[in-house]
Length: 273
Image 1 (spheres, rainbow, N blue to C red):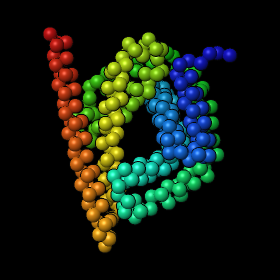
Image 2: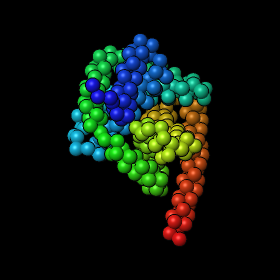
Image 3: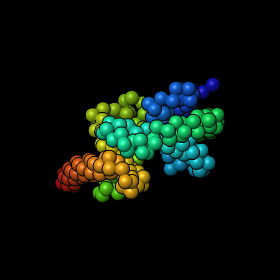
Image 4: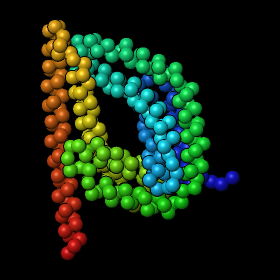
């Protein structure tokens, strides 16, 4: 029996982890377990993205299956995030009006009832991806991942707010893909401090995007139509708070990206001399 290459080991590990977490969540319904499940699924998505872009494999069916599970888990996860934000900011009237706790229980039950289907998807993916990743030559990764780092370093998506979410996807692809290399190669490509800086940056973008989602969700609930004065008051305060938080996050990101673009321009200028 042939030894597994690094990418194959990584893929099998994430699929095994996802299966384990899925089973745990079906019993415990712990929000953190669901979050970790989605992290494992994102890492599997990163492998799919690589195979789709660098090989002739038609990944459409596998991508659809994985996305089905990912979105179902995401529906429950988003409700937990909304509920947590309302509770942390003491908006009890909004939380009660939205009936989030009841809806969370309903969505959890729907998700858990389909556990056998989700496990079946992971089994299918493991069969397919274990074979495909076994055919991957390490030299291919040594070309793909540095090129990905170069792409991230150009900040091409980061010139406007609309591009931040896409840029975050690039960064996360790089942060996941670095683990497909040997430890020595990984440290040469992405030293620990640089990796941490990128991870912090993508987290900031993620938090900013969560604020936008929360703001949009609150508006969709149309709480402003209610005659309940307390609900009106909480809604107005929540909207104002989110607008302030979003503006602050945007300003911080704009400043950070401007500094990075300036540093990149200066580096390119020095290299030309």
